[in-house]
Length: 307
Image 1: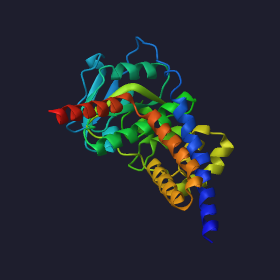
Image 2 (image 1 turned 60 degrees about the horizontal axis):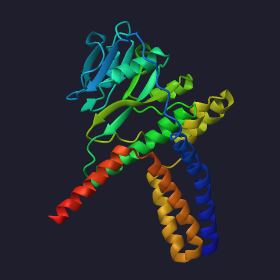
Image 3 (image 1 turned 90 degrees about the vertical axis):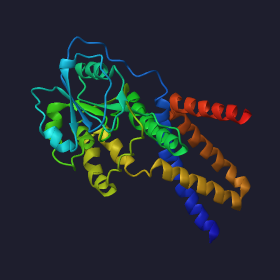
Image 4 (image 1 turned 90 degrees about the horizontal axis):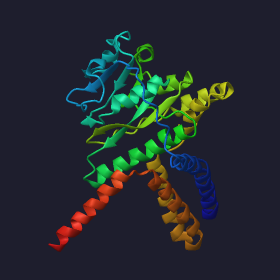
């Protein structure tokens, strides 16, 4: 009886390894290919509305001050409703922000002048002093690499978070109706490509929360229609909605490795090797700034211990 149960569980784990693990590996490796194409500089100056939460800041921009307006918001739906599409070509919606790259508007302007309608920006967590903060920052960067940069490298749309993105103002006003409006779904449904601008940096003290999973039941209902339409970008997102989160996956694999080791240590070798591969995939996605910070802190601790 126990052997039968273990066999069924092993088959289930294998399916996860092949399908989900393979999916993550493809996009993680794709992200390591040559750097994303840089949009050429342009003389065109788009007009920006920059929506930021109260008490947030953005750095002084290398962009004409008369071409952008900073607007604080407490309710994003109301703030967007008051925007005049005749005054602003592009709207940037940020979460809690401490500072930004000085070239932020210039890089977004170049992308939109080249034809972009929507672009996800790169959020960077500056406060990684604690173990928890560092882990959250690493997890966020893994999502960025796989679901944003890796997707763009293979010609698919980046995922779009609910903050830290730039978008055509007229399209935004027509599609952000209420708090239930899902901009990413609407962009994908209209087959509008979502760029990921990895060098358009937004800095804050805390990692952004992971986006909510797409409803599994809704995904099942939409799959036949989206498949028949050949909408690859939307189909990709629907398939991802069936995947458990990375944390659950790692927890599942680690638990299985420990369990199978106690039952048959020889049989467990292959599972520990597979777990090692998954950890390697995750490590490939962790940026240098997180690793360097960890090394710096370790060196500091070593110096203190010698005093």
